[in-house]
Image (cartoon, rainbow, N blue to C red):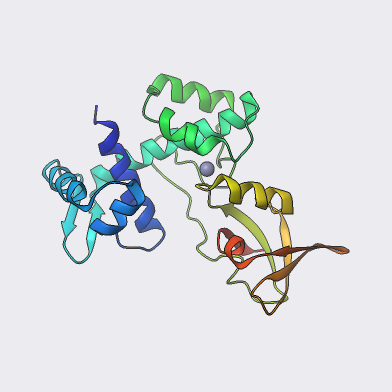
Length: 218
Ligand SMILES: [Zn+2]
């Protein structure tokens, strides 16, 4: 069994790469809240374990073995988030931190039981895809609501889940996953208006709009 910290590094490299960012020493240090020196030490260890390939200017990439472990931890994380909201009455802004702790603790048996109990779900409460047991994961959109053109109609796919205050604001606006919205005009202060349904509008700040990922609503 790999240590919690090894699992967290692999997960962090996976998420940075997924967001099209380089998993450099500095990016990882910021994401994991550790010093650059400890990142360097850990990357050496992970390279020895053949879980990552590290190139100084490119940053770290996962080997197939490293990616398999990252997806396994992400599967735990997202199943736990859904279990906490569906079975235990947590709200969607409370589950990320709990899942960050519990994801390392549950056994394969426990994971299977949660998945069965929830009917083998495909997405977590924030719209993020849950990897399958064999490590397949659905592709997701990298286009945000902020990128969507005025007048276009889009479906909300997922929302960044690290910031509880942001999630509460998004819920207040009614911009949950699967909601279809038509993008209204931008205002001068970079706040823009999203029309939800005919007759109902809401104002979305650019900061929030950049945390909401969308796909075409067709
Ligand atoms: Zn989530």
